[in-house]
Image 1 (spheres, rainbow, N blue to C red):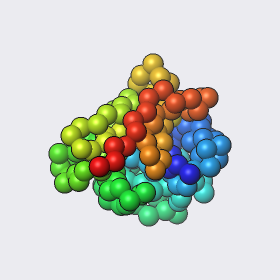
Image 2 (cartoon, one colour):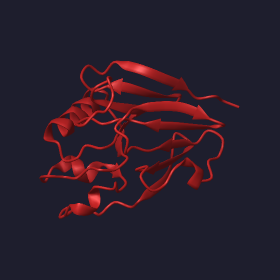
Image 3 (tube, rainbow, N blue to C red):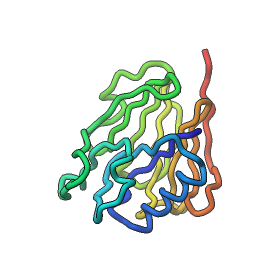
Image 4 (tube, helix red, strand yellow):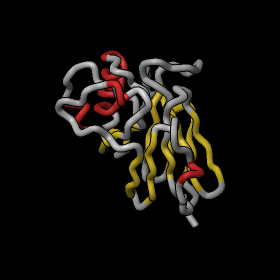
Length: 164
């Protein structure tokens, strides 16, 4: 089962519904958010996110959920996964081991690339997209990273992990 990666929801109920629908249809193991959740109302999904704090999150009250950290580092599928919003920290601020996945948001533009031995992904935004791709997210699977449209769940870019 994949992890759905999102960012820059900005409290949009429509964007939140796109994320919820994608997570359900894809049977996601979890949802990773690279910041700027900006919850505008209580919702069970907010407390389920593996989230970091974005530059706009500091202006919102988080009554029922813990205030997210600026970055997180965890292991998923045996890979080092680093999550940050992208406004203060970038990939160069971390020690990325071979095969690491670096997740950031902030730009609202989806991007997927391999840099050296690491994989960098920005899922774009479900609510305020700044690209012709429209509302987007990313998928982290055991063997690949992908970018997808949240409107029809079609994958428009994908990178398979190299196994050394």
